[in-house]
Length: 339
Image 1 (cartoon, rainbow, N blue to C red):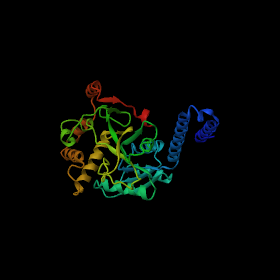
Image 2 (cartoon, rainbow, N blue to C red):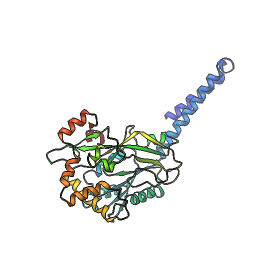
Image 3 (cartoon, rainbow, N blue to C red):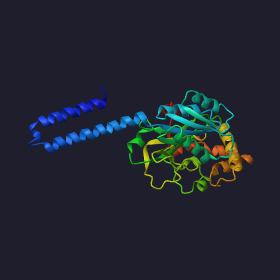
Image 4 (cartoon, rainbow, N blue to C red):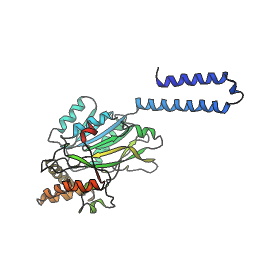
């Protein structure tokens, strides 16, 4: 007998006893009636929760380019934590990224789009994936993920919190950047990616303040996960906000944290700067504030200063000692969290 069936039987027994009891007619009518009401409400709540877990479809979108070192870990983790299906766009990868995506497409859990244009039209591509998730694959909940992000639900399932918040359409999810620790120039992911920024610096102007301080020590804008009960919701560049948010109930997530692994090795950083910087330069429609860090690093690349930029974005031993003492960073072992 299921839990729901047991509760129904218990309620039926309670009602039977209620009608047979003298207390129904004399001393305890209100108490008895309230007990029935509480039981009934619990049954209804459980029925809705169980029905939601069976029918609600959570779809993740994923935009990739040369992410062979992390992409399979990303996909495997999210499929284990509530994601039912993935709509992915590969933006011209030349490593093994596309092969990994194709493997999951052959398993029937991923729809793969090839985007050859390399001009950082991220919002356009992401919203194309989101609309496909909604219109073709009937997504009830959508979030847009980058390859270097792990959306970690403390409850164990990414759908739990948003379903329990019946009035909220959108959850705002906080970012935690994870740093590489210096390892004599041989830094690798995930073994050297082990310092999470748990108390980031606050800034009103990330572009300006990150000129003199490490970009990834600052608080990043939140990202969104949302229900599609009001239709598909377009997101802004970077997936940080809903374009037309008027009238939507939004709530900050207490369950989900996005762990972000932006710098994973020197070779990876150099490749991303060349890809991202050239893409920014080729798209004349992009606002100059979008991708400001790629533009800055690309200028350093063209002026043979990219090594300095890389060194400023990883943690030296003395940085670790100071920032850990100040409770800005805490150690985080990738294998303990995401495998």
